[in-house]
Length: 224
Image (cartoon, rainbow, N blue to C red; front, side, top):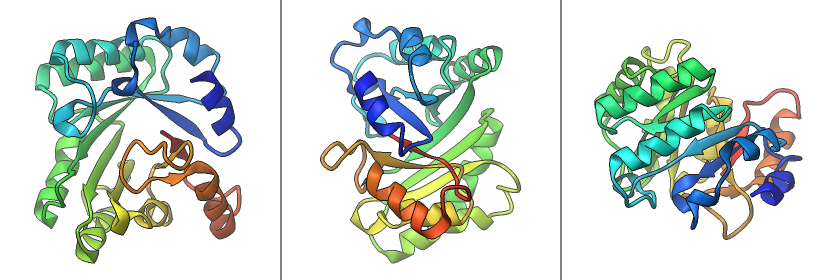
């Protein structure tokens, strides 16, 4: 992981560590990793019911995010659909530690309608999110337009938001969302190392961002 962080550092502004993708989570010294990282770290522990790889109990899953929050992480990502008391425990631990909370919603089957997407923004704010995240799967161009329209939703009104579409049809939304005000977007370490459908390798995405905006006028993006 340290080697990959070093490889991503020239191109990314932060890095996401997917705890649910690690073979031996017990061997990870989170504090040491954070202290030695050239990039701020987002810790995520995605459950299988939201497209991730963690198959254990919810208390065990959330305990790793609590550990991350007090280990110096820049961000922790907790799913909106996490049980309320567990989700609140992560938000409170992060607050005490100066760690920002991303409250996220992912739909790997498609995209909810406009009312549903807007409601998720409200629920993420009510959950205590510092940053909201809504990611859907594009089955057609309408799904892409609908999720990107969230940036003009009245509920956003200064609320930091990450919203784009996954899948081949949603690939360009990972770049377009920056022009619309996304807090960040996600890239893969390299081709074949994607943690979600449609991710663009970080070197390629950095080249696109530099081409369209230059290196001083863009939203940050992370290497997952």
